[in-house]
Length: 314
Image (cartoon, rainbow, N blue to C red; front, top):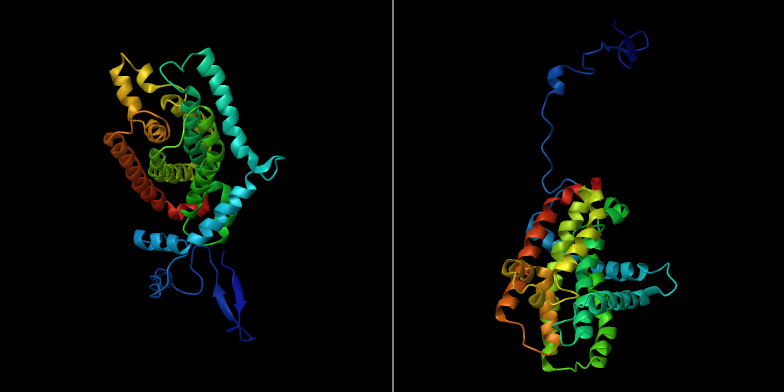
């Protein structure tokens, strides 16, 4: 049945009769509705469109002060609801050191073959906590800031970069406790301590790459973040945080090769060789750390950048 609607052009009052028969287009022929849309205006860009890589990096550099401010605010808010506040940044690894020393050092005797197990364990716990913090917090970098993502237009890479910087600041803060532990355990400063700076720099590059990967995965598959504590725990056991990989892989050369090429082990060894007495890190170990850092960062950044348009729609 055809219905007739008045419009200001045709009937006795000057209204036009418009046919609104179902299936028939209103206000014009089907050809008019099939006409192509007007081309975009030059100089305008679709909101939320992914920028070219070079321009994207330039936008990140332009927002470096925002990254610094956001990092500072996130770090301050991390322990806002606790009585001791940011003191937990130091207390948590100290408690972990005590528990690991009791269970692994004394009960399981993983301290064999390690001359100064307290210093060995302390460096391992503090340095590896940087990796685990980046992994777990970076996975929520996008999903935990959806209000900000949907309200403002900015390169989303700002968010995993900020979570990585927060974890780095916690590592640097922990040095306030780590240095006295080393001194009390009989380790004294040496010129080799300077090598800790490039070791932490390489680890930061690697951890930033981790944050990019898990941030995108967490944005697309939020349930994946529930697996990260188990993954980080297995990774810790494979990295030699509380035992010597060289001692425990004797007679198992294939396992030793796998563990020694694990990035967690690589960055722990670079830090331990810089701070503890003994042989300095080999050139092979430094090259391996550089390869893991640069390769992970480049691949992960491109992986995160390719999903730029999806993050506001999660």
